[in-house]
Image (cartoon, one colour):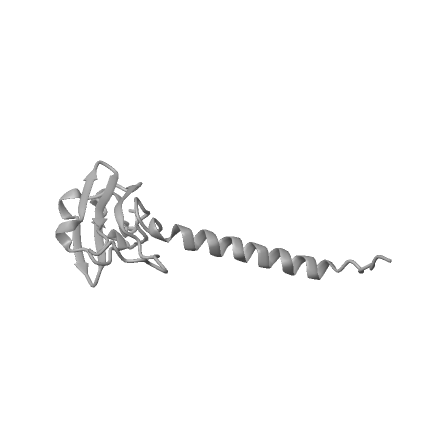
Length: 147
């Protein structure tokens, strides 16, 4: 006589989850040699003050001379490359730190005073200060009494 087992949807969901976990584990383990290489998106923050637009980007492991910054019209481009440490014979178990070339291009919608743009670099963080052109800076206008 055949055994009849009551259907348990929770048990089926758990086995589906375990199967997905195994699948992801296997994919991760096989892909570790190439993970983290190639082009990547440069993480950055940007904020606006009354006088400027300030952009901060994390570029760990680079020197200031390894970063190329161009501002043409209203287009800002930041380029560079983070190289993998020597010793590619290593068998990585985890490889998350980004390496390879990066490029980030932004369109700045506010007129910028190109002659006063400044870039500084400290502790792996690039800070760009893009001063607003005088024409777009907020001005206080005093009201005079009429005659």
